[in-house]
Length: 438
Image 1: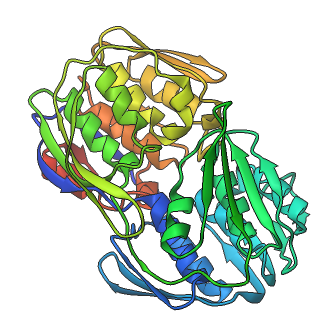
Image 2: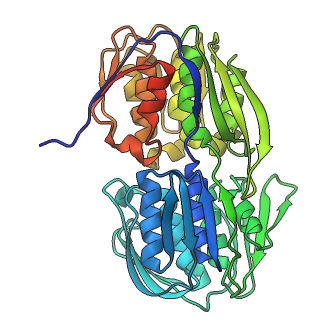
C-alpha cells in the first residue's frame, strides 16, 4: 500500500483569524542539542515537535543525555559529558546532523551518522573539512555524503576558519567544536544568522563578534572543558513557517491574518522585507523579548496588490528557505520578480530551484529558471496540475498556497513530509478558511 498522502488546494474566500506560529526549527534543534551538552537541566517551551526535531531528540539521547516531554511543546533536557560510541539517524534533518557533527567533535567518542534518502544525498564536507583541520578523523566512504563516521578528539585545537559561503550551519558546527578545543576558535564569515551565538551567550559562554571593514564578520570563543550552564529557552515562532500563512493572506482577496509570536531576528526577516518591497501590507506588532536571547512579534498580513521586484541577492542567506513561497507571491504580482544568487537551493531537501520552477510552470505561471536563480512573471494562476514534491516540505506547502488563488486547484503528490517542519499546517490553514482537501 502506498504511504503517499495526496492533497488538493482550491480557490478560497478571504482568509481571516489568528494562529500561533510553530516553534522555530533552527532554535528547536539548538535548544535540544545545547541542553544536552549543558550542566544541569535545561527547560524548553514552545519546541517544534516535528519529525526533524524528534530526530535530534533521539540523537541527543543516544549520545547520553536525557530529554523528556513534560507537556505540549514543553521539554526538559538533562545534559551529560558525551563519551563512547553511538550510531545516530538524523532522518531528514540537515541542520541537526551538521550541527551535531560539530557538537561531538571535542568529546572522547566515535559517532556514525546517517539519515533518510534525501539527507544522504546532501553535501557534508563543508562541515567535515574544518573539523578535520581541528584534529577530528572522519570516515568518508560516500564522496562527502552520509553515512559518515566522526572519530571525535578530546584534544582538538582551535582554528581560524574562513567560511566559503554565508552559512550558519558551517559557522555553528565550527563554534560548537571549539567549545572544548584548545585555545581560540574563530570563524570569519559573510554574515549569517546568529542563533548559536545568542544561545551560547544565554548559557554562559562568552562569544565575541566583530564587524570587519570588508563587510565580513569575525566570531570567536575560547575553548574550555567547563560545560554550558543549563537555562530556560523560549522557542520563538518560525518566520519561515509563518511565511506560508502571510503569503496566503497577501494573495487571497479580502484576507486579514495574524500570525502570533514570530521571531524577529534580523537575519531571518528578509522575506518580509521583500514582501513589503512588493507592496505587501505586512506589519510587526507587540514586539517583545523571550528567554534564550531572541525577540518576537505578531505579524499581521492583509490582502495587497503586489508588484514584481528584483530581490536583493545580498540577503539570500537570510531567506534561503523562503524563496519557494516568495515565488508563489511573485506568481500573483504584476510584472516580473527576479531572484538571483540562490544556487544553494540546488542542494536543499530537493533541487528547490528546479522544483519551484516546475510547480509554477505546471500551473500556468511564466517562469525562467537559471543555474542560480528564477524570474517569475505574475498573472492569473490557471492551476490544474499535480505537483511532484520530491519529499520537500517547503515545495509541498508552497504549492498548496498557490492553489488557494488558482482557477482549477493545485494538487501535490504527497503531504506526509510537511510534519517535518509544520505539524499543524493543515489545522492552521483550515482555521483561517483555506480550502485544502486531504
